[in-house]
Figure 1 (cartoon, helix red, strand yellow):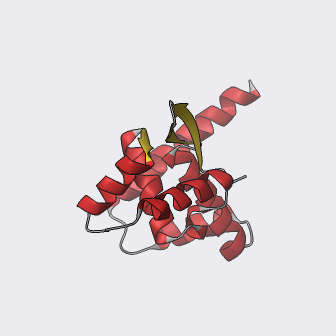
Figure 2 (figure 1 turned 30 degrees about the horizontal axis):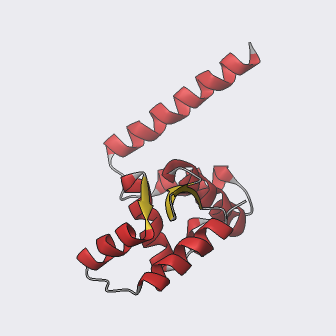
Length: 133
C-alpha cells in the first residue's frame, strides 16, 4: 500500500499532481510541464522520481513503443482519504470523533462549511441505514 501524501517529497508530489491533472504523461512531457513552472530538471531526475513513485505504488505505466507512459495508480480522492486516515491514527489515536469535534469547534468555519459537514454526515448515516436494511 502506498504511503500517505505527506510521505512524498515536493518533486514527487509535483509529478503526481501533474499526472492527476493530465491523466497520463511521459517523462519528457512531465519534464516540460515542470520547466514551464520554473523547474529546470534533467530528464533522468524526472525519470527517477517517476520510477520511485511507481515502486511505491503511486504510479503505473504502459508502454507506447519504447516510451513509458505513466498514470496514477490511486485517485487524488483516495490518496487524500488515506492521508487523512494516517493523520487521524498518528495525531488523534485513531479517533475520528475527536477530529470532528476539533473541526466543528474551529471558529474559522463558516455557517456554510458547517452545513456542508452536516449534509455529509447525514448522507453517510443514510448510507449506513441502507447497508443495514
